[in-house]
Length: 87
Image 1 (cartoon, helix red, strand yellow):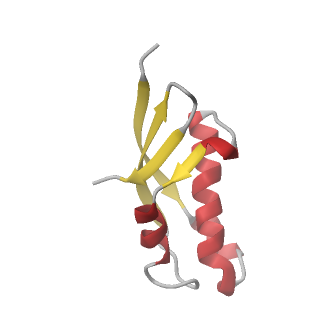
Image 2 (cartoon, helix red, strand yellow):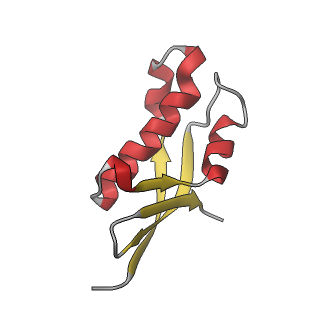
Image 3 (cartoon, one colour):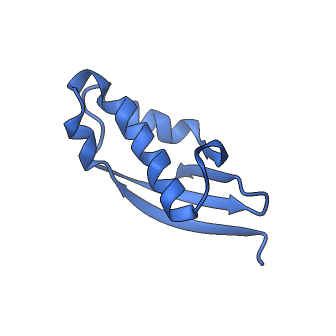
């Protein structure tokens, strides 16, 4: 097997609108984690979200996260998945 698997993933954050408006960015970060868990087949402990992704979600404050975000997910051979912004 290859040392690492790299994917560019567009994560829809539509469900964040269901959350109360004072918790939407928190919900968006959880959705990113859940989406990565589903697509890269790992559990929550093995997902590492880069600070740049967090800053992008929180750029407009807690009430107005983006509708979707494009990230690069790299899965290493030890099972750790590193999530960063796709440049």
